[in-house]
Amino acid sequence: MIKIHLSRLMGERKIKTAELARELGLSRGTISALYYERAQKIDVAVLNSLCKYFGCTLQDLIEYRPENK
Image (cartoon, rainbow, N blue to C red; front, side, top):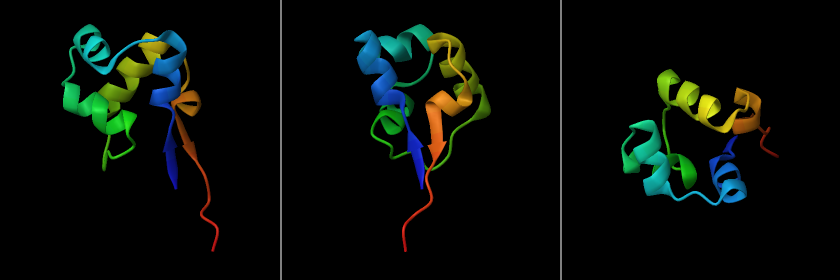
């Protein structure tokens, strides 16, 4: 299972999806899909923009958690 920590990063900085989308030049739908962990695929350029904006690594943004069987 892939866990996306965008909502935590945004919460720590008290930034809204519309504001982040505007700052990064991305669609609000892209940010919302990542925020609510509904994204099916993520463009590398989007990951790069998010890591640069938040000053974080990819591991801070995305985490793999094995599913319990």
